[in-house]
Length: 294
Length: 342
Image (cartoon, rainbow over all chains, first blue to last red; front, side, top):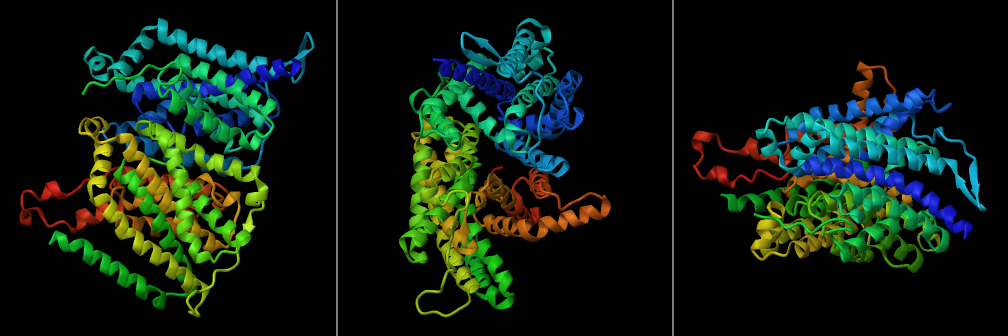
């Protein structure tokens, strides 16, 4: 029973990270219909920036955390304005290809600048754990969960209760109408990319202490995030976070209790879950079936 | 006039392929053999990406499946390597279909994200079952030997089988994209809604295209294993899958002949051009251009430049260069020029 609860908490903490990156994917997709393949690599790159700001990972610094969020936000917005915006009129495939190019460039640059070796990344939380009735709950897991959920909450409040958030939702729902109502959609898209990049930076900085910092560290996390987004229905922000939590718990439970599932099979299992969800419930757990009018 | 263009181009290609090994060194022949097998892979991927409009970031893994099929059959079951090539294609094709059936329910870019998981999962599976795959170490293949009583150097033999495959599979790809099925694929690419409304099953079309492309990549992978004489999980990284997509864009997605340029690009940027570009760069700025990752940056920048400057790739450039000047052209000529895809 103790193992069960410990696995559950680790799963929730992993799941929160998957959920936050899934939310970043869903945000950009809802606003632009473009899947940003570079989402994971942008997160990885900003995590390297945080690592550099923290004296090459010597100790966690909160100012560096917030500085990284700001850099990620500006970087994401700048990428949208310089790379993606000129392709607005091109086909969706071209825009997707551009994000693939970005993925490759960022991955290469990180290895080029900081070398592809494993780097230690500090955690803001102590490695100790609380003992609740014999169950060890790692402070790091609770902290990660808390930070990610706080970011998601802030984002939700922004979209729900501010005028800018309303404008962004309008721009995503119907760009033409929003433009006619005086909403400057192009800058809102940049804003959306900025938010997604900042959210990605949070997930990168939260996951790096456990899986170590390498240029490839986010590739698997991106797949988990995507599987989480599919589980949640791809268009639903709440679903993305819930899907992430569910996937995190499920993967940890399988790893703990089903012996053939070793760490090497974690990713194939996530892929299998993704495909099974698609076969049984293509709209995901929280999604609705989209009816298109032609 | 247009009816003749394709057969003439094919005849020219065959002539160049036959003459080339007599004109170049042994090492270049080996490189050109790799161009042939990359051509096979790109043709398959172009059927999926260029004609059906589905991006895949996982086809390096289908090359891997083909390569492992050949290696395991040759090393553990003592098959003659030549006969494993079609079988490698079939195995990869079946895996492709099995993946495609659920995955092609995705619209547009989602499929690409799902395929991103294939190379990563493939590596995981290889490491999980070391008795079968050789695990991290992989397996070594014996040097391929010429068959049919022909005594020649390994490079020439490799060149021959590689280009025989390519020159058989190029017309095959033309035949696939020409007919009823090819029209269905292009309809799905141009509008999923309109093609569904016209009775085309988008899921079945995409699944079939996925299977075909996986078959092509499986054949290419078998040839790749024979060319490099070993397989291990690092042989088929995600970079390979990305390089294939870059090759498609450079060659010109939606043009099968363009894939010849794409294949030349893929082989030579890996070995020669990429490092040369970096050397040029290092003369301007004093940075270490031999550091890991620099090669990837070159791929990415080339892909971006092509997307902005020549979105229809080399095939598009050739098309606009060979077009008659506007005052000589008949009015309906413009409608014939396919703008290409990406």
